[in-house]
Length: 313
Image 1: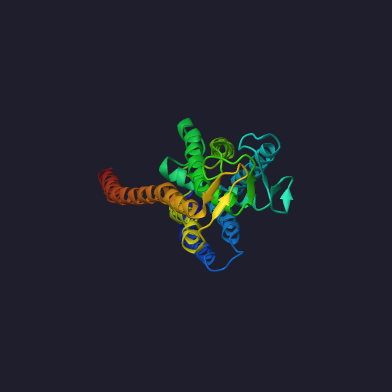
Image 2 (image 1 turned 90 degrees about the horizontal axis):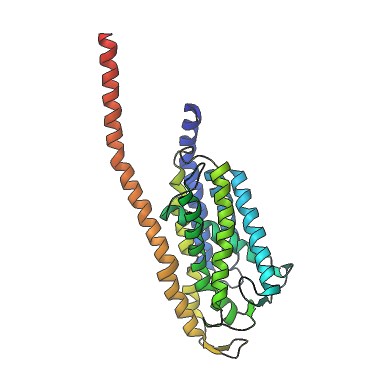
């Protein structure tokens, strides 16, 4: 990167950061609004896809974003439809809504893509980002961390969505409030696959990690959005009725227990990961500030040495 492009990138960085923060504030407001307005729960998730496109394009380039979107769409839909037909990898279930792509409703994909990308960013903060010629530990490890961060969302979301709201039905029930263990293993496997495809693209065709000044400036907005996804569980805990529900296996569950468990999992799952990531971001910024005076002193010494050389040459 030449001097002009570096200067241009640094000039554009405050503008980009402002845009990301405006998007973040709007999406968080949307999640809060779902507490008071019924029927808009999908809007913040769709808006997060817009955040994905903006954030991902500025960080990795539009080709990389296209790879993430394509891999997430194809792999998640392929395995969802496969599981509906065969039971692998999630278990036996079916959706109850309309507007399906084959057997999967269209609104499932935004959740995979949006929360998947936010989980990816959390993983890059906790472990390392992936770029051109990244080490294999990072290339494989970051998708693994991202897959677990994404599955933490499903842990809190699936029992209320299936057993209570019955947006999809687990045909044989399951031990976790009507949800089988295979579902969570399948989520981790599916998310890992499309994140691994993305990581491999970044390793071989993505930008170098040092190519974009201020590359990590959008980390905190993404981490906040990852945490904000849990707001709907707190709202459900406060507002919803406490009744008994029965899954297809005949097992009965108390909705109050499900809502409370979602809160526990949110706090010690997604919110814990978001806290770790936020602390890591703060730690890195303190380290960068500590290095800045040392670098400035080193540059000053080099300038002095060059001046002495010119004087006595």
